[in-house]
Figure 1 (tube, rainbow, N blue to C red):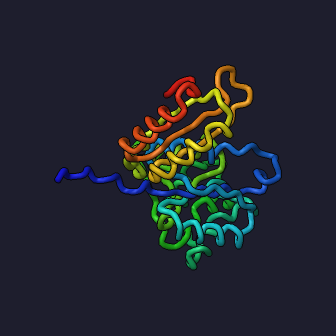
Figure 2: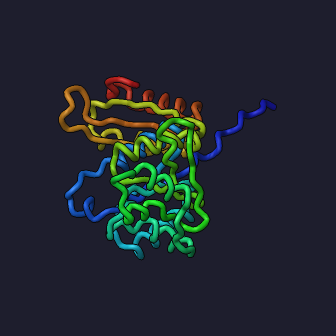
Figure 3: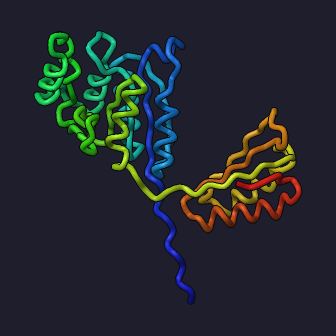
Length: 253
């Protein structure tokens, strides 16, 4: 009997919660979820949900509570700061049934950095859910400003440049086995290739197969993607589709 190679464990999952009336009203173009999706995928984490919620404490609490129970990691973006509409921390605290407390390290850091431009309201940036931990990251200068983590929920700011710097200090915490991906470009439309895609999806249930029409592409009409963590399964599904679709495939990447 030939021993079978063990299959990779399922990818860890993540949810992204974007918080802010400015996103829902179109005043600000959302960039953070797109950044986090790409970063997490490169780390081997599967993003399963993205939600945008207003600056309403009860709604934040409800969404965070559900996401934390259903996913390995949850990342919030926005709603942290000194103004009346910054209620993310309170919402996360409510999600876990704990009070908001002021962290001494953060308060001292805010006072020090603020200097002559320190305002008492700035100390709201030192408020955290009781029981939260401060992740100081990789020792870089940016890591001086820690990421607040409440259980499996990571609290990130809404300003894209700051979010990206803060995430960089903790990103290696989330590294898992990488995804394997292939792309097939078809000159035929989706209707012509749908049966072959159905069969491949049934034969290789561990491979996520996507079909995306490209109406303006010069050399193809559909992009087919294959993603999974089992290289043999991805390659097997790719080979089956190549055999089934033959001349319909323009190229493979």
